Length: 142
Length: 401
Ligand code: B12
View 1 (cartoon, each protein chain N blue to C red):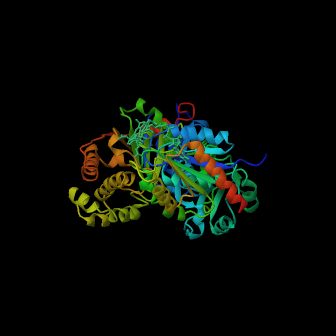
View 2: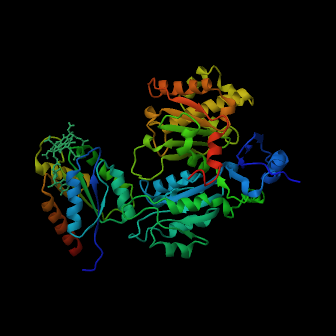
View 3: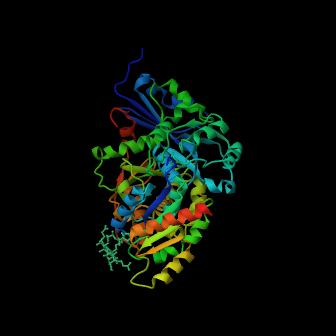
């Protein structure tokens, strides 16, 4: 108690206008005590990183619902490497991470290669947020 | 005995011309760069100006290319972009923007900066700046410096930077822009002591009203433009000057993350002008792959760049129109891209309206839309031949706010 809330930048990447999950994520994160910076739908990858710089956020939580993340994902590492001081940023992505269907394990492996710490393909939000908490606890313990 | 003239006397000190407008007349004179601005003004239009009492004289200036700023911010999407927008709309020209994390890689500008703006971080973030900022500033020549970033970092910056002005953050806790404080500060800058701008301060001898920068005056007139011209929204306004070219545009023409109450934003190309910046305009033209085609379309060769005739100036103005449209299109490198196919009117103000006819201007817009955008779209050209827009904006706070 009394500790500063952890900051999370969230939004929907690319030209994706599916807004319902984004609203839910905002509310659920707040309910769990995070300070949320919601960039909304239609957000460019660079805006996520820029928002992390301006806010000092510890977590980046990207949603993709229409399958576009497939394309953006490949650019994540390259772009993040241009930022100094984001090495500790926890990178998380969820939603529908491919166009059509695919093998979940393959998808997770691919996105981890793109540079994400936590990958939640078609995972229920609360399950995803539990995973985040576990991850944070493990990291602060190590 | 002085017979006081009715109404207001409006004066615009540009980089090339001085204009004086009263209810009965509008005069325009080339400036003498060896003379003090006030002496120059009085020797050319003293008879007119002396008929007015100080409180009826309104002055704006873009002399010496206007006021300049260098902006240091921590991200392109938020602090730097917001400060850029505020500076442009306040009538200030941006010499450079520096992304703070890479500050060591930037070279120092050769000219003295009128005001340095430092921004970055929301108020709950801290320790965004450190020695690399102070080291850079130590070598930079500037007249004023202002910080409008995270309030937690203000004490540290104040400790290290002499005469630092601290203003409320331009980025709020939801990452939205807060314009007012920085804008007020910048708009009022001509009242500060700015090295190299002393002769503007001399102008306070003939006016008791605040001196503003000319582009700020033009920008604030735009919501009222319909009272003078049949302008169809959305529109852009081009002011091609001697030193810089200004564009003011309806906000409907951009898509971005900045939510402000302004209906019109401004953008400047600082080394694009037909007198003082003639050489850099020619350089920019050489660098554009379509310019040779444009020259042959205008039935001239590049030898025109070596001529100093009215015709050469007219061609340069036509080139400037083309280059500006190109720069704000999706092919250009400006910090915003405008939806050019949505433009319904293009308004031209400044010296260009005395030099070019509507036909000469339309030849260029037609070439641009056909050649670059593959479109038959034709925005309507409107010429502000009598400087009505400036007059509208200059008439003081009461009529324009
Ligand atoms: C409503 C809807 C629309 C509406 C959106 C309205 C709006 N403004 O939000 C409209 C009609 C506009 C629309 C348009 C399109 N849609 Co649509 N849409 C849907 C639909 C039916 C429901 C989405 C929804 O709101 N669900 C409710 C929310 C709460 O659930 P959710 O989005 O799935 O999110 C949950 C989880 O994924 C998770 N989650 C989400 N993000 C994250 C992030 C993290 C970190 C974590 C842990 C969890 C998490 O949390 C949520 C709650 O558990 C889905 C199909 C479906 N039943 O899911 C298709 C769907 C998402 N749409 C789809 C498509 C293809 C489109 C279009 C391209 C269609 C087209 N051809 O024009 C366009 C795209 C427009 C664009 N530019 O983005 C596809 C995507 C397919 C894919 N990825 O392979 C889907 C899956 C339909 C399908 N089966 O084909 N769509």
